[in-house]
Length: 412
Figure (tube, one colour):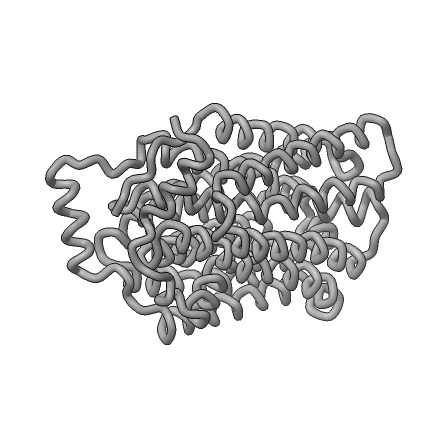
């Protein structure tokens, strides 16, 4: 069992090369690839109430389109992560990007809720390539503290999407409708394809792939079953599940329960996402002086506290607008959690970064897919299910951090 100070030293010990290969243009491209998920999830959220009538379905039916995307994203990472370890990062990334463009165009034209659910599943499945491989590329090019900073900066770049998407969606839902919003998602998918073609080069060349194959042939453990990898992976996944619960419930929480219009909803959602981007930038800045593990624990404690306050407000029937305060704290705290948890997890499996990234992503989106329907169980007029989800997910994330402490991070 290691201490927080040990984790900092372990990460520093693995810093064998600078992070100058993570150029601003590459980080921007990787951030946008990983940001496809929040664009695909958040842009059409303001249209949920309209979609229920247009597609003759219920709130839970519309939320299933989000669940399908999450399920596809989770399964797709299990496919593209190992493929990227075996065949390199670029080829699987290109295949996924091309399929994602096709699925996104068809989703915008889906005639029924059933067709939309299926196409959203395919969209998530193919879009997962950019999400999982972008993390693997960062791990290919940086180690140790540089890795922690790289992931925090990646979260910062990706954090722009949740800021822009709901606000843009709230402004565009009127003139474009929900089909137009899904058309915008298709255009974003096309942009990610261009980024892969022109900016993201191979970071896992044949010599590296051969070294990984040799390690597996020799029977050396990949590290995927160790506490050093599993503990921060569980922490990351359950923290992300808390955010997904909030995302899925937000249209009804803000628009139905609080009575906000679509523009006010988009602005409030964007404020929360901006807080996440700001805290991610802060985490990147502090990584050189404070152990990533300590930043991670601080963020988790804040998340649990915010969830408890949210539940207390719901139970005491406090004015609904007050619920926006603990939600803001919870989302902002994620900036200290997601990047540092990812760095600790992937730093523990240098010989299996693609597969490690796939496990993180599959658990992340798999749990998200399970959580999304739960927050809608009580209908559109209660936040009680969301309160239960927030308490449960943040508590598990904190317990994984405090009780399932990682062992030493392998040196490279």
